[in-house]
Image (cartoon, rainbow, N blue to C red; front, top):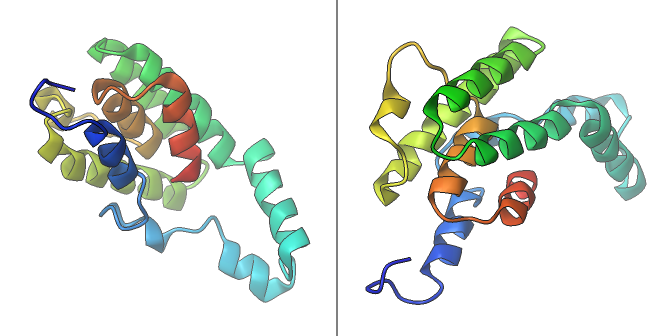
Length: 156
């Protein structure tokens, strides 16, 4: 925060970045929740909580939080960030999951770019930016603490 920014602006910026309205296309992806409801696997609050818990323990959301943390920890080390981005792409278990994370990540970088926290090299050709890597990069360079970054990534 600079001396010319009002107090709390960094918190409002973080709220914007994790808002469902932030233009990343995330509304199009649900980890198959609609299918789980249609099949009867999710039918009430209890089965929804169990389904979400399983995703966090064994699915991509839990992995995404680990990857977000690694990207946040990489700080300004662009080579390390690229390595983490490549690893995150390799973790996608299907073409659809790859497209989901990369399209959302790159949309997140474009949208967050107006805050001046996205380095120009992030747009370099040949590097794909999965969502948790993009979030880790932006959160760190935007001054978000480690704990807030991981919690915010889980919320988003």
